[in-house]
Image 1 (cartoon, rainbow, N blue to C red):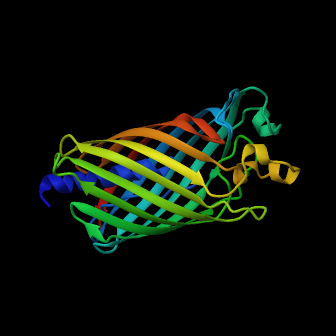
Image 2: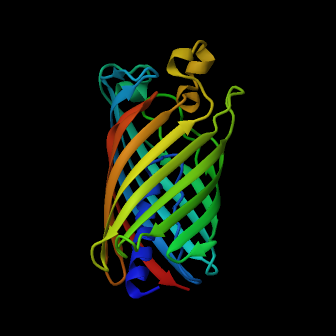
Length: 301
């Protein structure tokens, strides 16, 4: 590829880190269809603030007044051992708290005082193998996520679901030269095999589609759409026993649709990127928004 194509591929890879690092909290996988060459890596530091401003019930109606917020930082190391095989390890530190204004639904002390609950969330290990890496790119991956600390998972101020996951994914991207060599489309589908709770299947599908444009060799922007579908679990109207209520966040059938935009700028030794994601629709999920800023420092070794 020419220099413009190389810049586009590099920018999309950086953007993909931002797109998938925190938007789906259960996964810290860096998704990217285009991969770096052998012996090139990056250290990524990503900060995110999320406001949950309402709930959507299983019939699509809103439940207002039970809001929460979370803040997190993700440290991630990405390294390409060969031109095709790369590996990523990531660990997020998350803080969450209930913000009301209604009294907490679960009646926990940490929620009633609107106190912060902080801790390391889930360690994520990802291996990717690139098949195509030119104008069209295709990269399957496998990743494993496991809790990195013994954190609580019941209540409003929770930082995760405390479940093991094995995720299979494929990332694809194409540079649309017929329209412009600066324009590309990228996407991802992943299927997560999730640890069962109360003998319930909690497997999950996630997908995103992104339209990207390279304004200059250093300035890149994209518009993305995100979907999540939980294959098992319970709808909010199906909870019957105290045992089920105690596992609410882990077994709820959370289906969602989000829309987001991102922009990145490449300096000589550092990439800086920002995204805004709006939680717009779904069933048994949150409405809200997230703001993310990240820094990626490439290196050769």
